Length: 158
Image 1 (spheres, rainbow, N blue to C red):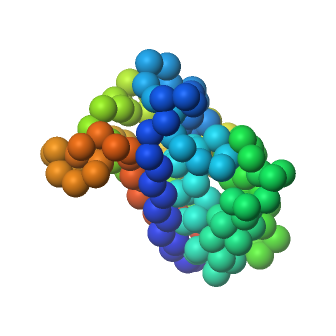
Image 2: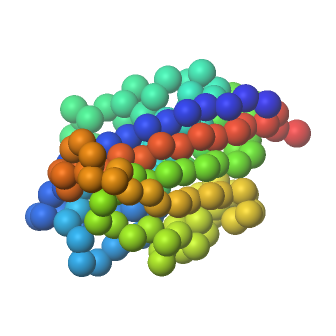
């Protein structure tokens, strides 16, 4: 088994819908990014790729390539899962922390968990997604954007 760590952060963009964990969250500015800006999917993707020593999300889906503009980040995550499987591993579990002053993750966490579990092809009980505030400190505390941390365990495929 191997463990990988992922991190992503984005500024808020009021011109875009907020997509997190594959869900559109109404009533909040979206995230600035080349794809759909889903920082949850990006952090998990980096954690899985890192666990297998396969680089990072940018090396597989470069932000300067037009074909990834506006891409569904859950599709990118699914592609990363395929690369993990090709490397001889499969996702074991993921643990995610969304750090934001204004987004309430709790009310949508179960739906996010279900969506991520479907893409990873693991039981929902192997996906944890929770929200934390930054207690008003730094750029996250000022409401300029959000950050996401993820840890992923991968195990040898049968």
